[in-house]
Length: 363
Image (cartoon, rainbow, N blue to C red; front, side, top):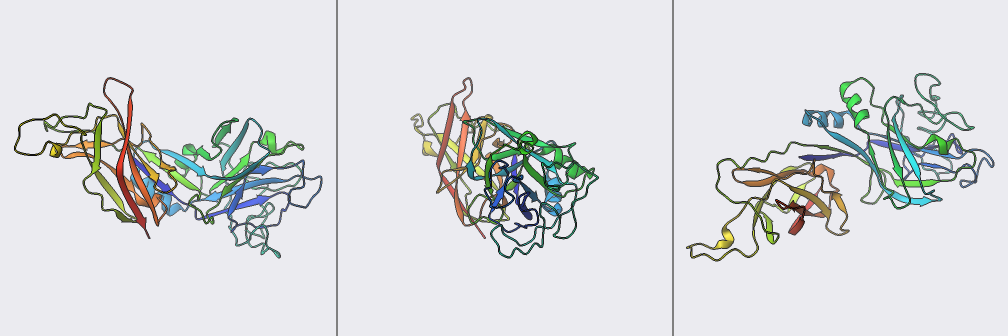
């Protein structure tokens, strides 16, 4: 398996209530519709729709394309910073943008605003969004971007759902890979039933690429390149739920562009006593085929890469178990813990262990 994260090279929010404002360097991306209020102090009685634009470099995408010869999954991930007036159920949509746009250097609170990049009216501070060649949608104020509605991603939320965005955009990225549509990034918006409702009120804010936190947006790729083949070795397999997992080659520190294969060693916590000339604690066993890995932030305990029965499988060869981590998907200057989950043969019992396999990513 492999998990690879790409971070944006530009993002911005566009506002129907402030249609000429550029917010390319804001720390927040807004995906909101507040048509029944005057939350930003202008256009009383008019619309107040806020959409996010996010783009990833074609060079980074070509790197991913070279890794993924088979099926893959691509998820656009945004992390919630603030929410208000959420209904019990709502849907956020995502489409590929149909025109190239400029991020700009403005912030929402700038006075004067430089107006040197994308806004509700323009794609670069000067040129208006096209009126043909794509889908447009607005309530009262024309503009708001142009997108290809043929390909899309969406995520629906209920009252108890995690409010972070984890949008499946595989169909869009696949078209970028094939060249059938150009890569101008994504537009993320509330569903049209919300945006075009003059009485709607929903506010969701996410961290942008300019955030000073560990939660920037990313495009997360996953694909299965695992291989479980122990060869002719006569080493046994863990069958008890009381075992120890260690990494025999953890260097402890890695650079943010490293790709590293972690090798795992497992053994029974309390081996059966035998009369031998060597320690039973040196006898290792294989982890079962239904074994998966995850990465947790050491300080916050948040799951950075969660267990996935398709994409985070632990592999095996004649020398033991292993898996590969691309360090560029992890925030530098932070420490992480590797977790291992095994589903024991003949049952659905899950055993999760870490034994403090900890490493740090450095710049």
